[in-house]
Length: 347
Ligand code: ADP
Ligand code: NA
Image (tube, rainbow, N blue to C red; front, side):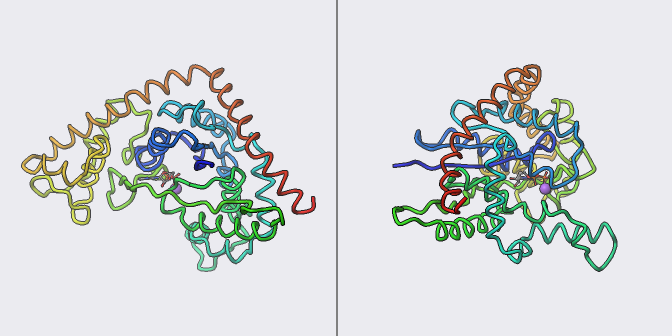
């Protein structure tokens, strides 16, 4: 009997912020801790996805290495997991092409991520008519590459955020189409398991400066987010200038007190506690007390990953070894599946 196979990816687009860490990356480490011995964990740095938007060559090159170092620094174990660069295993691209050939364009037009890109380009051009022809094909077919990332390892579980639900549904649809198209008389199980999205209790971390929006790498105000590489002084400064409210005392009330509640969410995440319960400890206290404690907790949580990252950045040889070994393991895993797929298609 096989265990589960988990697959998840991260784009090499700069140092992750606290929202990325608490909302996504920390779950990978927890998964690694909680997975059964025969469960497989596959984590990929997905450079091909990053190229759907313009990237600076040097920045991308550095970010690729840095994201691998960050994953190691937060505790991903390359001996326990398959940790690799997507662009080292071209099986992803081959399967993506084959999946493109069974994907109706209408399905991709319905993707909310695509619609959002259309809306963005409309705002940028300040035109009421959207010129779809200006957006690149990679952006359009991105969810198909994502489906290939998952299916090429026959992954059964995909730990990603709620915003990815539509993409996972597409992946299941494509797996189902292929299962029927590529079925062989000798099969007693379908070629591809239908992967399931693994919802983790989502901790949505908000911007420190504008708590009506989420913490994001694309917001111009750098004080709106805490980066995993921030020094304790930078963390202190950003939390001190976090927007809260003028209401006396501390309560957890995300609707009416988003800034205050966001600080409680962060503190609770650091303590692996419930924000409403944490709030009770501060009921008679000021924002200053809360901010001081949030600062201490975040500094403490990021202390080891940050030190480890600084150390790994000085060890390019080790990072290259991890990348190379990860690629070998990834290719070994995908090769037999691709052989069957080619044969069954008549190639
Ligand atoms: P960003 O919005 O900064 O560009 P991404 O869209 O690249 O972040 O998201 C990478 C991962 O981090 C996703 O799994 C996403 O759900 C998670 N994530 C991003 N921002 C936050 C946030 N503010 N709070 C919680 N999780 C987040
Ligand atoms: Na984003």
